[in-house]
Image (cartoon, rainbow, N blue to C red; front, side, top):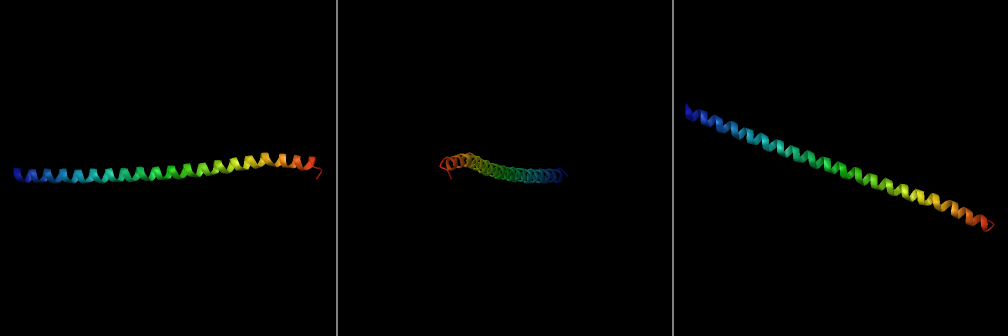
Length: 74
């Protein structure tokens, strides 16, 4: 009787360890996915910021160009 109980306890412990192992793995995969999403968002943000900067530079260039043309009498 005692042997059977010990076997049962061992089996339960094994099942619990397997469950915990799976949960750990799922947690890690979840964290990896989150990191990838964050990296993609950061990259997108960076690209948008760079585009905005280029746009602003063009906006500053344009009046200067216009002014130079006007002064040259064109």
